Image (cartoon, rainbow over all chains, first blue to last red; front, side, top):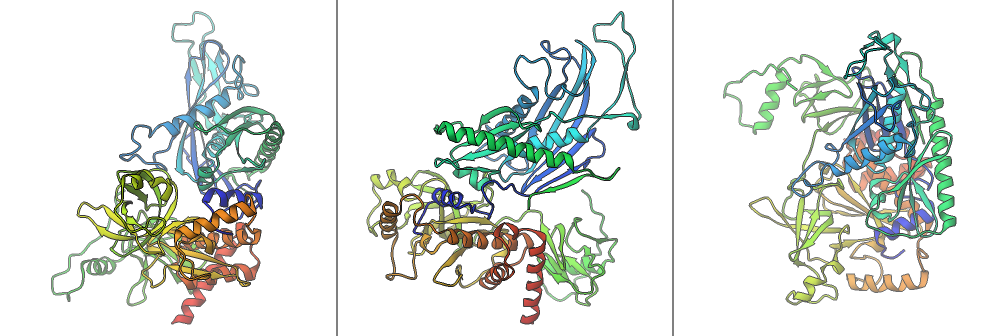
Amino acid sequence: MAALSSVEVWEAGVARNVREDGRERTEFRRLTITEGVVDHAMGSAQVDLGDTKVLAVLTLELGPPRKERPRSAIVNVSVDCMLSSPVDGNNYKQFDAKGRDIARRVEQLYDGCRGAKLGCLDLENDLCVSEGSLVWHLNLDCVVISDDGSLLDCVAMACRCCLRDATIPGHEVLEQQDVGPSGPEVRVEEDPNLHRTLSCGRVPTYVSVGVLEQGQWVFDLSAAEELRCRSVMHFGVDPSGSIRSACTSNANTCVSHSSGTMADVVEAACLAGRALLEQIDASNAPEGERRVVHLGK
Amino acid sequence: MALAMNVTIHPVKRKREDALVSTFESLSEASPSRVYRHGDLVSVGDAIQVGDQGSFLRGHGTRVTEDNAALRATVCGTVERVNRLVTVRPVRQQYQAEVGDVVVGTVCEIGGKRWKVSLKGGRAGQHAGAEGVLHLSAVNLPGNAQRRRTWEDELNMRNVFAEGDAVCCEVQQLHSDGTVALHARSAKYGKLLSGHLVCVPSFLVKRQKQNFLEVEFGESSAVRVVLGYNGLVWVCHPGGLPLQKQGAGDIDSEDDDASEGGEGEDGGHGGGVDSSCLYNLSLVRNVVSALGRLMLPLTQETISQGVGLARELGVEPGAVAHGDFLDRLVEQEAMRRVAVE
């Protein structure tokens, strides 16, 4: 083995199924999910994927729905990367871009198909208070504590686990007729024991796949690997294994793959996403305690 | 976060010591209001709970008081316990460059006849003061040419070191405004290839004689480790270093390129790469990373012992970072310290 550049070392590692940290191609890093970390929020979760750590917190508001979706809740996601990529003299102009980009992708994931009347959360939950005038706004705020690659995966997972942990208060609409311009009066249930939980059976998450030119692919890239991989794709996969969204984060490169490779990659992503979500949903915690899930070796 | 402390001001009759030691003494004489445990934030002088285990291993950032009464923190940070090892992870430790330090960095910018080399581990953004400047005249040109750097040399800078390359160099000078000037004028400094970069806290790499270490794996396969004082460590195959000890004497980087070109043609893509080689590389890289996580110092001894332990226990490289192996590593370090004393 003579002098090889880091890209060549990485590609050789993938070809031999020995990545930089000893993982195999399809092995995820250790995933630790802790729900209920923040007591005063309606829902919270911290997801650690290897050294990538994201904390997601949910707050609720009542507000008007979108015009084209009168019954659908609105999910607003914001991602704060200030801890992991701080501002300094060089990157002050786009310091927010990374966080905004990730937030936009997760929002698109939750919005579902364009032209559909319902987002992915609304398929199983009724989050509409008064059709056309008041719906629940779910504000998911994510803080990236540290970033070691696969940040989009981690943020999507954190948002999903946060929604699983969330409790939505019940409501009572006080007047049906003579509704004023600010919408009907609503009384929101205060007792936390009477809150309901969300059913997240259709909520997808992202699975990032790095595809190499030889037709091999790897899951869960670390930060160093992301620098060397020319083609990284993100697939939004829901628990039934169907693709909800597909995007890529390499804006300036153009890589071509054969259709056979792409079909294999898509299928692998679906299966991996389904297996991951099944394992997460299947593990239950004792009543009243925080749920901590460890996956991977 | 305000920490309430009782500080007593001692009169000047104390014998002359440096300021830090006297501060420490004054803080430790005040009785502790509480004892801190794993995960707590501590500041200098706070007592750390040692626990029900009789023996403990004192790690970085801690110190036992003279009368062996308590374990005190010497830095501000978080208490961490792995089995018997008690350390305090500092909040932030910036690397302070000294003239003559061997450092490993990645090239982040090229221009103006110089390379900007990032000495910090994080990939995104560079904090002020964590960048070194490698001037065009401070590197050996390919072909060992000794001449004035011309306009063509400046245009071909990217062929020498491109963005993202790992380089090994030495601190030449510290300017008064804090800029660190680097040079790679010796044959052993230069571009680093065929390996992985590991980031550990910079205080774990102590001043030592040898920064270029070798870990033997028997049967003529070995892994080289380059320890940078800034906390970046390069773990590679012997062919990835600028200076090769084995083979025909000193080979400069031009011959490396020639041999790489030859191998590239013969072996095709990744043809000459051995899978056991990659496995060893990954093992050493993970052991170094585990030592960094446990805040144990990085020396030839600790690294080779860690690798030896991993091979003995048959631990996969991927499993090195997990609890069981970390515990064993701490045990081994305990035994090593006892043996030294």
